[in-house]
Amino acid sequence: MGAFKTVKSSKVTISELMLPSHSNFSGKIHGGYILSLMDQIAFACASKFSGFYCVTASVDTVNFLNPIEIGELVTMKASINYVGKSSMIVGIRVESENIGTGKVKHCNSSYFTMVAKDADGKNTEVPGLIISNYDEVRRFYNCLKQISLKKDRNLHEEIFDYKTIEAIEALKDYKVHLNLP
Image (cartoon, rainbow, N blue to C red; front, top):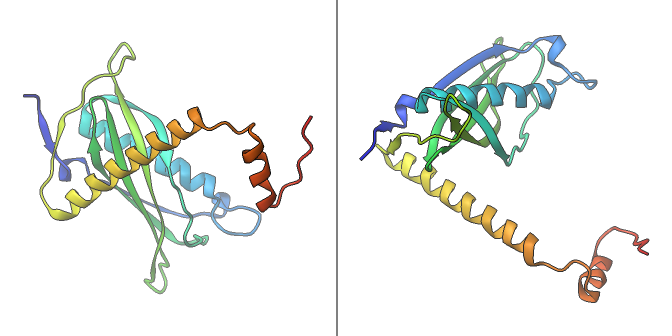
């Protein structure tokens, strides 16, 4: 049996003050900048846990719940929620804090699938996961559900015939104008 590590051993937290240079045209912090920080913490978390260089394989469901303002302190917390053979799902929670008032907002949560690579750039096995509490059990099962839904979605894409008369007729229920050959 290979090595196992705790979820706690994977935890990484970063905080950064949001500057005007991070803002978009509406004066809020640009979502792309937040995504870049999330990718960095996912890398740090997965690499710390696995002991290998890691790459981002996918990003699942990033919902921006609350805007982040210039001058707020953004804190990101990441931990490994699931491990496969060479892949890991990193859960990330993003919060912003108004430094003046102390008010904290949950801004988004997301899941990054990271893959460990060896020195030759090939996928390499990661340690197993020691689950120590029921919150970690819940997170692991949520990842299993997420993986299952992704497989179902991919299977649907492979078998669904979007050119059938029924599929084309069903588009009448949506705000589209068909201009097909």
